[in-house]
Length: 160
Image (spheres, one colour):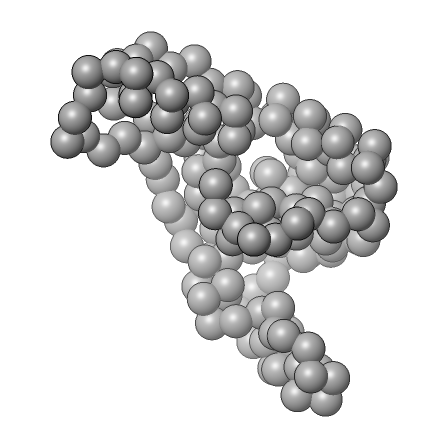
């Protein structure tokens, strides 16, 4: 798993914990890291060559995933849709704060594009190839929330 994925996953839990109020209408695929590892091992041990597989359990909107995380952390879910005007204002504020404080920007053009993108992934090929049985995203979120709460919401995930 790339450090970008680790950062984005831990960021979502931290943001919801801190009271994230906004969501976008983007959609993307989610998968438990345990499923990724299981798929990799199964494919490496099998007779699979020159093939590409999508390992994605479910396609969910950002609102759905944020609501799951909020529920698992016993926090209020984001309830305000971040429309284009709101996103534009937030982007400008983030730029100004980064210039004044010297900290890295948290809202970039790519994060804005990504937050609005609707990307749907099919897992049919990997299911047919190895009989993959995915951990439901809701279970993965509950497990991750339990870890997050146990190790302290202020604990940091090591970025590599």
